[in-house]
Image (cartoon, rainbow, N blue to C red; front, side, top):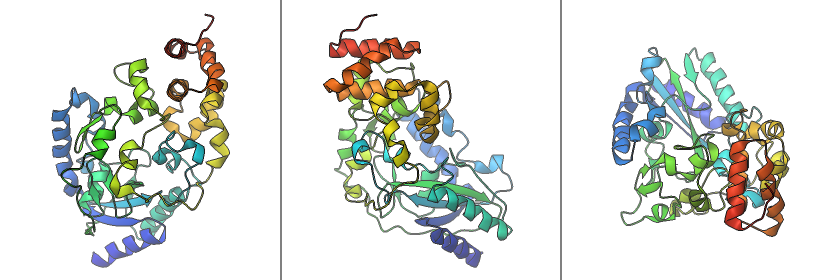
Length: 350
């Protein structure tokens, strides 16, 4: 199967993937050990990591699967819109999973067509994956996982990972040219504003800024307290702090091209505009792209995020937009806006 493996890898590189590796399905079984170790380190770990149950054993759902093709998708070549750097996480700005015009989305479909032509049965899952993709990429020798929990190639961590389960038994494992994090480096841990990243290779998702700002429900409540929200700084949707502070990501976002469809959405991504729009308008614009907060029962969280950002980055021009939240149709937004106004000393008529 050696030639077949190299043919698959060559096609992946031709389609624009940064790296490609292939491992046997059982190779990721020790992912369960990593998850159990993580669970033991954080409060209520079993609850917080239930979403990855089964990722160590993809063959249980797909018993015909024998190998996993692991693909690295770089997004470091895209331009970060100046006004939104730090406001929106780069992984979400350049998310290709639901954008049918995105280069990587087209490449994924073309790669599937190629596998079909080879007579290979496969399955992939665009949104959430079929296994622990960072661990699979590590086991495939495509890079390493650093202390901030992110997967790195020689080009840094500004990449996403895809996995295809196939019915052929193939192995193609690389050897990354990377050094481990220095033992005395804790820049990412010190920089984490909420203490979510509190030990190397360990994070508490319930404290993570990304989880708070990109999920409709943030345990233990739907809305952050003002005290917690104050820690989010300039993050409106997602967070890049532990990646951007990393010495191994220095100068890795090289830019050079625009991500398809992003420039057309910039006018809707400002916090004041979010407060101005109806929930239907939010869902049909930024909700389509930033799809974690797209459904009718989730779009209200956009206004919570916008209010948090404007509170933390307050300028007088934000006052009217903040006050408008106190008359919003959503009760959670109204109550949160009132608390933000109280925190900032803004008078409102209720």
